[in-house]
Length: 215
Image 1: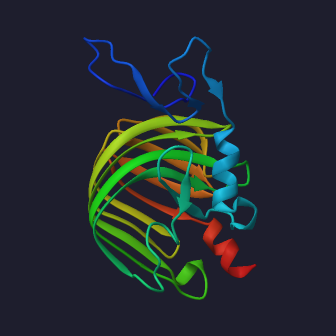
Image 2: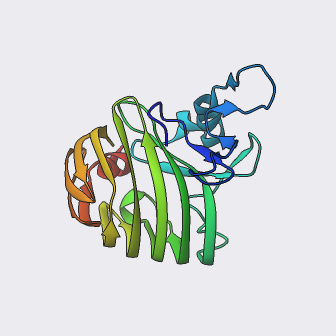
C-alpha cells in the first residue's frame, strides 16, 4: 500500500526489485508512456449502486480480473438462496455508505464458514463468519488505515458489531461517521458508531441501523 492509497502487486521480492503486475488505481503498461490513471472509485460506486444504499450499509465487490468487479449480494452471500457458504476465499473492495461520503476497503479474505440472514429491516438481520482472516486497506476522504486480523468470530447482529480474535489494524480519522483512532487493533470509535477494541477483539453499536429501520 503506497502513501497515495494505491495498492500495487509486484512480481518477485523486495531484494530482486520485481516488476508491477497489478494496481488498484492505474492501468499498468510496459511501454515508455506513463501509466494512465483511471477513475476506479467511480466504477466501484456504480457497481455497488451506491446511491440506493442505506446509511451504514456495505457491499462487497468481488474482483474478477482486469477492471471488472461484481457486486455480491448482501455482504458476501445471498441469504435468500445461499444462507451458508463454506470455505470462502475472495478479494475485492468493500464499499460502505456514510453521511460524510463513501469508504473503500481493498480486501483479501478467507473464512471457514460464513452465514447471513435477513429480516424486515436492519434490526432483524444477522451476518457472521467463523475462523476468518483478512488483510485490508481503507480509503476515504476523512480516514486512512490498514491492517490484518485473524478472528474466531466476526459478526453483525442487529445494531451490534462483534469481533473475537487478534488484529493489527491502524488508522486515524473519521470512519463510518465516527471519530476513529486505532493502533495495532486497539482504539475507540465515537459517533454514529460507538465501539472499543483491544488488539483486534472489539464490540460496538451502529446507531445508523436504528435510523434506517425507523425511516
